[in-house]
Length: 122
Image (cartoon, rainbow, N blue to C red; front, side, top):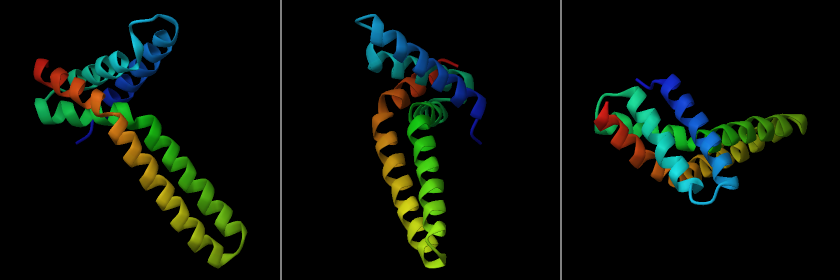
């Protein structure tokens, strides 16, 4: 079962350290992902695989959220064009969600590694 509190906490850490990384050289986005993923994995506990999963979700949360918003917007736009437009809008929305979630998961691999380490430390 996913511990969404751990995922959201890790996501907030990633965002905050990412903002600091924009101002302070040397921290950067990689460290933000590693630390945020480690926080998510540590809070979720349960070992390597559970930490990996929670770190991956924390790192990919923004992209998954964007994909979900695109899905809803494209589907609503399709329905505004008529019933058959809703089908095409839904398909376009599902495609947009799949692409956004895939890219978010790939970009979140550093967070997943941090999560695995955090899960081991818990």
